[in-house]
Length: 253
Ligand code: BT5
Image 1 (tube, rainbow, N blue to C red):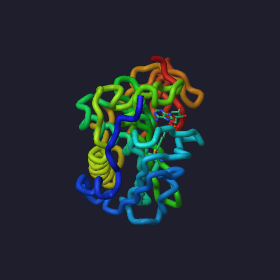
Image 2 (image 1 turned 60 degrees about the vertical axis):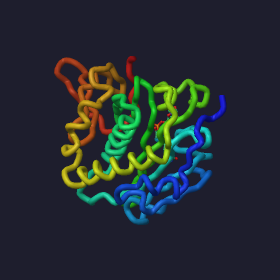
Image 3 (image 1 turned 135 degrees about the vertical axis):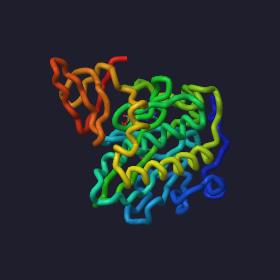
Image 4 (image 1 turned 90 degrees about the horizontal axis):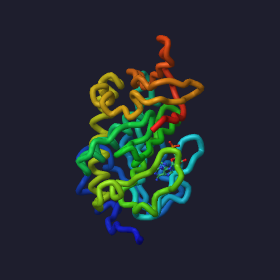
């Protein structure tokens, strides 16, 4: 099936949807290697890069992010977190913003699969990548918006979905971007002020892994929540709970 989207992410289509500071400085390309590489981390906070097609979209650990031209939201945002905050937590802040934006658009509840996946109906609809450069962060967010089933990557460890495959509706990516940036800004301001503890009430109920059997970083057990510094707690049994800083989780469905 052909791509369904005829929307635009060009500046004139996006600017009516920008409500806060983030996105006032906006770089757009039809095509680029990765939106992560379009941004200079020292540019002003809230500078945003977007493109319609990435030829070398990045995931974590050197993996690829795949999306056909014109179907997805592919964006990166420059953040200058305070030195006394733990910058890797911004991945969770980005995932929370993506959850809220996806929920606002679809009306369905979205969850975070620690640390960086956004899940809708048990499918990965978005991924977040935080890259730290001398204290500055370039936060990349990819949301599967209007891809058809055939346009989604197959045989991924976590099954992929798009807002379209999960709801049968086509979405305006410019509107979704405006909503994502506005929510990210609000959550980021909260995080700057009080760290993850400030966002804990929103994070806890969205924990996709909680109660599932997981393997991560050499540990096996039941996921027991995300702690206030963003670590995944794993209950290995016999009263032993470990907190995992980073890693790739496999889970039982
Ligand atoms: C992520 O990595 O989930 C972070 C993805 C971040 C993408 C955005 S797009 C805008 C910005 N510019 C970039 O270059 N990157 C950011 P990770 O957890 O490592 O997941 C990557 C894995 O997800 C891949 O190895 C595939 O298995 C799977 N995957 C690839 N494309 C996908 C898609 N469109 N939907 C769902 N899963 C996908």
